[in-house]
Length: 426
Image (cartoon, rainbow, N blue to C red; front, side):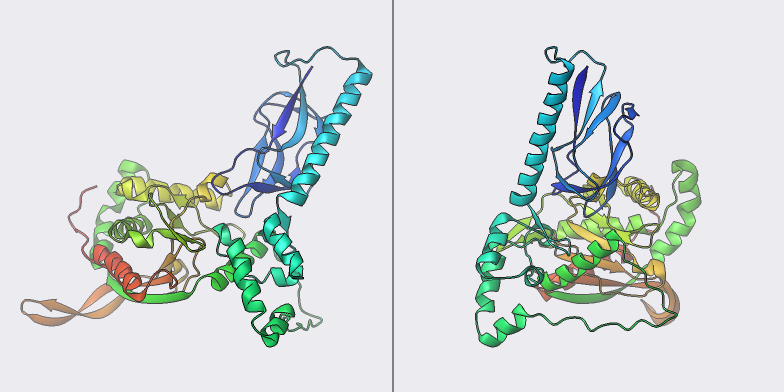
């Protein structure tokens, strides 16, 4: 008999760990290749880990709610294959060997949990260096959770800690205020009230939103776009498009195509901020906010969006939206975004002020398309007519994006939409 180590696979850019949420198999259960063994959760998406071999589950090395690092062994599966057989052992020797393996992995797990990542009660993660700096300065966990992070995914860096410690000691008043942060006012509960615990994803989203506001200096620019040509063109071609491509042509891929073009025109909107360094992204990967069955939003990513024609963009948008609704997104589907678009018009809003998806520096909200009276300029004079219009709301990080760039970018998106060719062939 041979033993196969089931490891936590690589799950995409920036994902270094996952939490075990549920074991689907028990010790002694038979397992087939590609059959799910356990469920895991990252800070972005839930997923299953399948077995790569046929066999029997003989060891479970992590419990539910344990944090596992990518590449760590989570379980031992005994197979019938002779390909990886070790030298013959007696039953007692084999039992002792398994115990030694389990002890070694358990020790490694404890070491990793203690030395690689430190977890707070609010779901934030800190490097050993940051934790050591906090301990040295007598910063308790509750206070550490309030420190704004400018690193990847909003994590607290060494420079963040140095800046925080400096401001913390600026005066006794500031120190007292930070050391004892204001607590939320208690909420009274009446007899008829229902108490609903937030979901794990809801808690993570709440934390990320607060962290983003604390990290980025949010500012907004708004512009109204006349999309009458797009409205009429889509109405004319959507039936034939469905017949030919088997896809529903919505407004979203049209808007995403315009955003991708504008990002090529203004590459300094396609950046990330890491401490004092600006990272200018080579690829244009558009995040697309999509609704999940539970009511939360998730942001799957259209990779290399500027390289897609309208047919390709439509297929990508529809695929990601459908898999988001069915809870079938993979970890890699939500990684690597460089700019995000959210369609608040889907819910009837005419505009919004969205929160930036860290570590990006901008997010565009698409308002509802409305039929409104408008002034139409012609060679024969001005007239009042019925037009289809929408608001574009651009939130951007004022630390690195000034008002000129933020306004020029959203104006470029509007210009691409208004210049739509009513005779466009696809």
